[in-house]
Image (tube, rainbow over all chains, first blue to last red; front, top):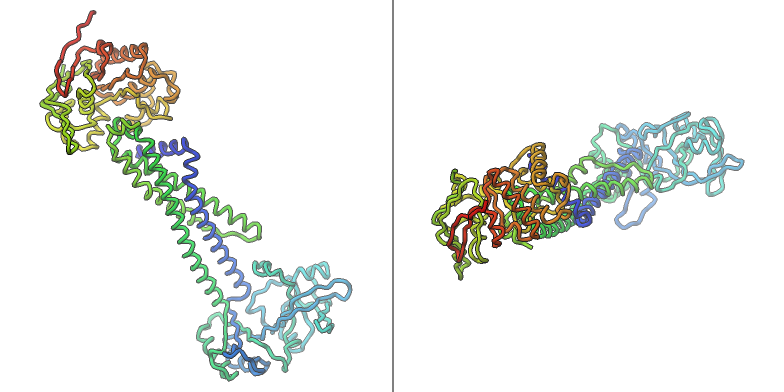
Length: 403
Length: 231
């Protein structure tokens, strides 16, 4: 135990007396561990960003549309209000929300000077039940708005500030100008706080306003897709099969021609992409650690040769084979672990800096740091074995004569 | 006086396959505790081989070597390490201090391998360096010391585990005449205090400090005589 402590002190002083060389030796490990930590942290961060993204978008959302095999669509492939009502009758108990995802871009104006492009989403009532929203004032589009085709509008906090200078814009009037030049007046019924969302921030995006679906999706309109939310306690896969069959029959298409996608699918895809990336990262890590380890072995061999005489002296003075062996093993383990530690700091630093620049919280798994340092120490010991054995095997008489 | 070293019918043969070199031939030798001995001979006479065997750095091919009652033949390398550590103090011609390591740390080294606790180590190493006249230079690195000072550090190191025997291989070979006298006076003083000292040398001036001279030629011990002292 005491010898271990002495050996650590010895190794540190050997490393200190060859600072530049020790650092260059560590470089391979630093780069290897650094890049692994960086990529793993980027992966973890992406995962958490995407997870929260889908939390916003709604993990239970499923979209259906017709995707003909020959890529030729007929009018019957689109969805009418009638189709929606039929689907609602058939599956309403398991899908609390359904619409045709009517999304458009229009100009929002207060009739005086302010006007800006906004995205409008024409929703059915109950949207805020499946997609949690944070209301500062007022409420979401409700059944009354939809049934009476009221010109109600729900806007973002930032929009309220911009047009009225206050968050509480409930009861105020705004105009929507369609691209065809139609101008209609709306009454603000609710102001909500936008979720901080990375994807939305990336897309830059216009402000989003909600209006009743009945204003735009009339009984003679057709929608391209069905956008629905599945109830929490439902067997989502079973429901998906059943709905696919139902829609196929309704549209006279085969079930293969009914395309559906869910947030879960996309997350699963993201996850498999990430695990693919992890395998690639693992391979890179293995190669760079191999190269780094060989670098350490090389330098340790040089060090052993240079210190042949020292080894001879130590043996003459009573060092056992195991003393010399551990001395050099500890030295290579410390070089390697220090490289791993510096690499970890470097990797985290790079990711944290990047995260700061694009404004997202970086996720760093503390376990990764422990594993990285531990693993690089193991690499150091592994690649230190051969040089250390060579040192330990030296014959004291020959070693003492070595010039 | 009690017997410290007993060598009987000892041979050392180097066998490199094609050539056999009979480096030591039928050596018989007894050394008592407290002796001060010079081993002399021309190069190739076998004196270095004997030194290596006495120092437990090498094993005899056959014959008996007993050191302080311990039979040395057929010991494992680690056992020999432990014997060197506790029983023998080495002083080399080239000093052989560990570079970039302070005088104090160098003297501590054999005690580290003997697992002497840190505080005790420092106290003993300090005392030994003071004894050899380097109390002011504990933290000096070997390259900051003169040849004579280096050899004194080496002697302090050789004494650190209080071995019964001190083996010096041409200890003054790299020193000027005044340092040679200093070092030999230090050996003489240590011998008076009871340390058994064996010096390999080819200098008569050095041998003159000792009490007994063994002369080797062609692997044989050909002369063993007491040194006449004037005083």
